[in-house]
Image 1 (cartoon, rainbow, N blue to C red):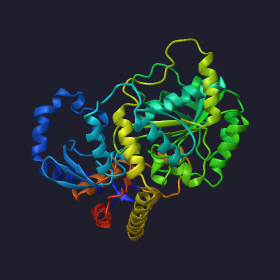
Image 2 (cartoon, one colour):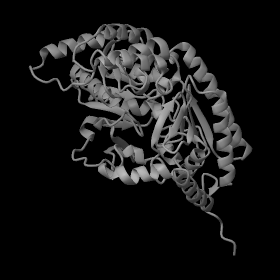
Image 3 (cartoon, rainbow, N blue to C red):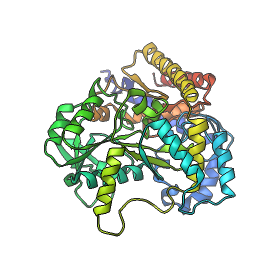
Image 4 (cartoon, rainbow, N blue to C red):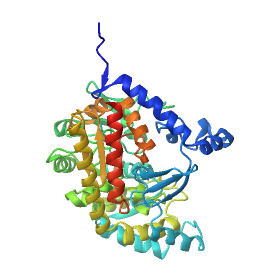
Length: 456
């Protein structure tokens, strides 16, 4: 009797396993220098890498980068790779944009950090307002820090303890956001390493696109802030329903909560981020990753009204550490890179190029999926494109979690990299930069088609 094959995302699991195994061999054979270098030097690091995320790629060992230029990586063995991961958005405008590299060189001779502002800082503040809107800005090093500080301000000015986040959300490693919705209840995410405290007294989770659920949570009267991305990312992309963001704004105002918009990934949407493109009205605005061209930098800003409330709360507190800020944040190198990025790199013209290229990529990937009659779909948010090995569109975090097909995704990633195309390791995300060419996009589409054919 013929046994019915097991399928994941419309693909036979035996084909997935076979491609994964053969792709690992091809990858290793192409990188003998890398393998030797890792054998000689990786043992000094915990688990062999400087940061554990570097082992989340589906290859048998990490690629060692020798050089990154524009939208291309070259590894230690000389393999040239079209880079559509771009540091998971950190290098969304390309590797080492010339104005940023020049700014780094200039500032390096003037000092790296001294915990005092510069003229670049003053100009960067003006440019932040010009780009993102009228806010009172603060500079941090990572978006995690920026979100953490924004939540501290929200609690201070509202006198309430909780943050409302969306099931499956991503806001860096902010503890408060590490909750999920399980059978209608908010629980601490089970996979948190070393988590000792219950996070539910200070956080509540709702489903994205569920305004009724948001209102029910806000009606309890203990929510200081809604913290949300404009589009759910890092979990299979979930687009907002029409009217969802207007509803959030109305509910936050009605129930006395601040609305914090985290644009760290959705900065791909266009000039000024999703907030500017779609006319959102946050009380607090957060962006990080690529905002300084790849130099570790994040910014968070308060509306004038919230800033006044912050001043009052800060004046009334006991003296001592406020719980916000880090010594190396707002250093002169960050300001030099911020100024260069905002004035010369993150431009409307750059976004026009990115948008056209991402539309080309979206159309090409969609055509491949349709040609092979696969139950998959493609989502785009400006320069950010993601293929999802599941029917769509997705409505919320629960649906996004169910849509992940990890063994299939790993096989696709491996097949793409062996054909010279790198995408983000945590999901199926691809970015088009201002220096990404149509030829690179077409090579990715062709590599996707060839890999799918291998699987079929």
